[in-house]
Amino acid sequence: MGNLAADASAAHPVLALDGITKTFPGVKALDSVRLHLFPGEVTALIGENGAGKSTVVKTLTGIYQPDSGQILMDGQPVQFPTAQSAADAGVTAIHQETVLFEELSVAENIYIGHAPRGAFKMIDRRKMRDDAARILTSIGAKIDPMVRLKDLGIASRHLVAIARALSIDARVVIMDEPTAALSQKEIEELYELVDHLKAQGKAILFISHKFDEIFRIADRWTVFRDGQFIGEGLMSEVDESDLVRRMVGRSVDQIYPKRAAVIGNEVLKVVGYSHATEFEDINFTLNRGEILGFYGLVGAGRSEFMQSLIGITRPTKGVTRVGGDICVIRSPADAVDAGIVYVPEDRGKQGAILDMPIFQNVTLPSLGRTSKNGFTRMAEEFALARTYTQRLDLRAASLDTPVGSLSGGNQQKVVIAKWLATKPRVIILDEPTKGIDIGSKAAVHDFMSELAAQGLSVIMVSSEIPEIMGMSDRVIVMREGRIAAELSGDALSPETLVRHAAGITAKGEAA
Image 1 (spheres, one colour):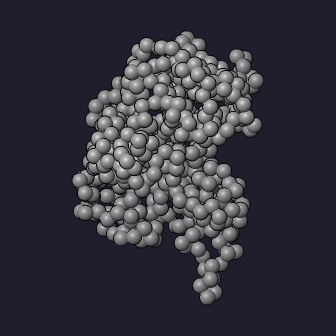
Image 2 (cartoon, rainbow, N blue to C red):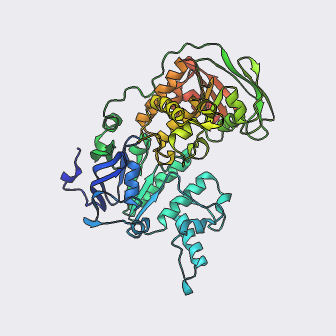
């Protein structure tokens, strides 16, 4: 195990990286790394945020040019000076957040930039429609190629992104966190698609932070750490603890480091919160130093309720009490003034301004503390941002770095730091570790536990049962916009969570 080059029975790689180095100002993103992708096999690229995975993807797709080393296809050196040259060579990528165009049709989204052309080099729309329909059918997507993208749901848009990637004659398919926005049923359908691509002999690079997915779908593994190649091997020869140890350079024995906190007095009380279409009759209390988990299946109404609680949307009725006093929250600014802050699930659209540097993102809600007479004081902005980003172990070249250039886990840390800097009484974390690696998860969980121990009240919305079980003092289960159960102590188990979330009675029948 460890070096597949010595395996004489192994097929020759379709695509390989050999000694690739890529340096940015102040950061060596890749340090002489290697990677082998084989026909008809899935290779999982595993590593913490900042390990170099995104840089590898951008190098393989022609967005970045390596400083040194070689890219080899079928053993021959190649160069991808542009994204189009990589596509022409048969390298395609399905990203976590592929850019699509809402006002265009599905077919136009699939073939934008390489639409089939007929006489006088005009776009052959009939062929484009027919070819798009064929690709959608091949991946089991029952989508009309002529419907506008904006009329589709998230899962269908993701299938359009996959079809777009497959619209070129791909030999190498890169899947970067492809299941992030999918339900469990849609994830199973994606697995079937991967099996279909393997049967066609395509080499697949699969990037995911979810170990159950990696062990379900991958044939081989490659681990990067801090921009360096750590090892490679067969999935059949490792277990989760082996890969974690290689990823982080240490054994992660406690991913859910819940500390014993002293639960204090009531901080927040919600009474009769209802919305015409999203949720109904939500009642609960939150105490000082408590981590209150909210669990539910897709469509349970958890995020919709949280957004109403902090003033993004208006409830039809309901009362919020903070510290015993009735608090009227008509906007997020009212919520911040009341000491309630919200870290959203979609950090890219709702949590941060990606083009702005880290320090300005962190201090944005706290400008009253870092400005005087209408002028911001940069030294104080940097000091405030440094305090909270250091506590979260943010990894970046400098606080001047644009947030959009950070890995997903580090972007999440910026968003959390931004709201912690306001010194809230209640922090709502909506899927706080979605799309981030095990090492970063452990850091976020440890800091969450530290905050609760210091007296901050935490509401954690999560779809991950281990996270809910490992970090919550109490759990509220939501189903179809209502509270289905409140669980704690011995009553809290994976079985009871799923049973209440799915509406299954003790006899196993749907309620």
